[in-house]
Image (tube, protein in one colour):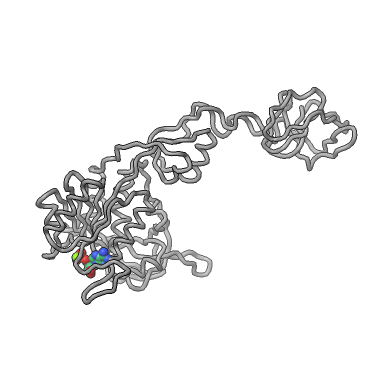
Amino acid sequence: MANPNLTPLEDALDHLLSEAPVVAQIETVALADALGRVLAENHYVPADVPPADNSAVDGYALRKQDLHGDQPVPVSARIPAGAAPEPLKPGTAARIFTGSEIPEGADSVVMQERVEVTDAGILVQAEVDQGQNIRRRGQDLTRGELALKKGTQVRPNEMGLLASMGVARVAVLARLRVAILSTGDELVDPGTPLGPGQIYNSNRFTLMGLLSEAGCEVVLCETLRDKREATRETLLRAAESADLIITSGGVSVGEEDHVRAVLEEYGSLSLWKMAIKPGKPVAFGAIGGTPVLGLPGNPGSVLVTFLMVGMPYIRKRQGRNPKALSGERIPADFAISSASVRREFVRARKETRGSEPVVAAFSNQSSGILSSTCWADGLAVVPENTTVSPGDLLTYYSFAELLS
Ligand code: AMP
Ligand code: MG
């Protein structure tokens, strides 16, 4: 049974994604600096790649019709890679290397291992198929075709492809500028001794890492004390430099939860009790025209809500082409005997039992247990109102997929 007071993840995402403006600014960067950036325009192929027919092997280029039984074929030229070859003399072969251009007139390349070299020329010791061992001009990319779409995030693979097209500078969307505000009077930064009642601010660092991996620029990182005025001042200041403010803590209904109150008074706010576990309270609103994503305070909830709610939103704002998560269906290696009305994201990892993959769960799934997130490699999804017995198939998402 769905609980009417809880918002399904899909509904919250629909709302968020309908209000996710793509960053407007475009900048041009050297290809060497383009890793992780999002292409701001389509890339059409300016010239065929490869630019000419070339040899796939070290060997001899020749014309098949010049082969007559065991007659030697004289070698009339040597074509190193990088050279512009002369046309092949009829009735002869040219010594050729991997990547060397095929001389005009040749129609096949014979591997050097299939050839006996004699004083009179080469003896070809294998059947020759016309066209063999030739990589055709344009076989990778044909002039005029769309090679990479706007909205593609550049991986090493795309860097190589752009280079192969001769692209030296690329137009990319500006990085999404994000402010991280951790709320709580109890928080101190690592490096400072803990006083009574204090704990270290871990969310700040989890979020810094997540945002960096997601290709965002962290422009401001501060701890917000549980005071109304300080909360208002810092939120408004963050709104001036950031495209997105992410807060942690301070969004439940406790009297010290000022983020919620300030957004309600000075900006706008939608607050959801999300039907996910961990991570119930998530806020989304705006202040000073800048969207605010309010994550819960508990460290385990921060990771889960960032990955499941924050990442789809950030991807859209970064202008990246949408992609559906695929996950994997794997048998559970654990049991959950009491069903929850909330969808549970279990900190989990893939293991093997015998030769079969299974998904194992960390023993303590409480939302404050950060060590569970280091033990885990991903999240296993237990649907709403469902119990789990060992062997039941669950969807498992690796952290790498969720962050990509
Ligand atoms: P809150 O939502 O502010 O009530 O916080 C919920 C729980 O998360 C409390 O136990 C907080 O102490 C803890 N918490 C909040 N922010 C952080 C943080 N930045 N680092 C570590 N723990 C936090
Ligand atoms: Mg708090």
